[in-house]
Amino acid sequence: MRIRRFAAVVAGLSLVTAAAAAGQATADVQGKPEPTRSSVGRTAAQGPQAKAQTKAVAAACYEYYGGITADGLNGNYKVTATRPVGVIKYTPFKLFTGRATSSWYYWEPSATVGYYAGFVLRAGNLYAGAETYYNGSDIPKTSSKLLGGGYGGFYSLTSANYYVPGTTKEHTFLYALHTNGSLYRYRVNGPTGPVVGAGHAPGYSGFKAITVISESPTYDTLLATTKAGALWTIHLPVTTPLKGTLKAVRASGFKAYDQLVASRCGKGTLLTAFDNTANTLTVYALGKAVGSKTVINTIGTAPATQNAEAHFLYTGSGSDPMVGE
Image (cartoon, rainbow, N blue to C red):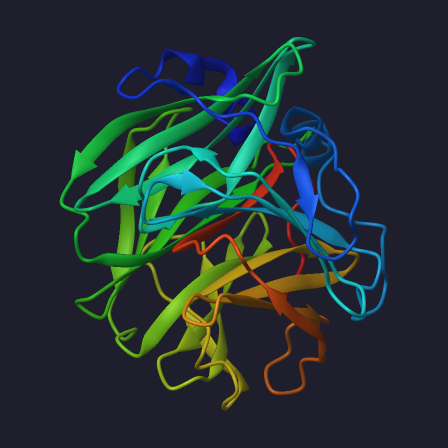
């Protein structure tokens, strides 16, 4: 089932349901109100800014990010790749705790209902979570559903969603790093799971964070940092067994970052790296990933004042695939 249908039945999630506090966006940089979260969802549903840029410099691109705090709040950002980096924050609302999460996809089954939905690691469990907006409200109802236990060793989570209208080749995977030194892949079967194991491979004990930069019918590509601060790509065919081809992109410079969140910008990648200790984010524009010859432009660093522990991308559910490699 394609992920664009994910949110169609998310309203059935029932373990946690709460009306969150309303909040207009406030600007750390600009100083003007931003649209409501539900209208942001409509923007996300349009997909990545595939035509925004054709070069690595991504000055016109922007993305919306969520940030889950230790208290279970979700503090959102709009981040624009300008110099200086533009950061607009939204008033946090009550979600639930989570130590890692996938991208959250938006779908709008009617003119009055819209959903964001994603997967969240909480303690040793995996949940499907959702934010539901009714009648253009800025007050989402949040919900979560337990998918299973045994996930205590995972510490970085990312999702790949390949879907192109008119084709039969599509897939939705979750990728996760584990403390046992392995990279795991799970196939997402249905809008709220279950997720089914689709292979794992050893040899990743030195890695710290992962994010998807390419999605295609035959492979996904992850961008990953190591605990020592290096940057690598991991090319993963969708076939089994799971076996990655690793290429070094940079030998150092990325040690401070706890999380990476990537999105498409033109023919390249907009990368936002979060330093949870300093509560900052740094934006990079990447050209096509070609190992050490990959073009990386640093756009700038800005405060990430929501004090979040787990950051994620808000994106469209049927949007164009990532093309970072």
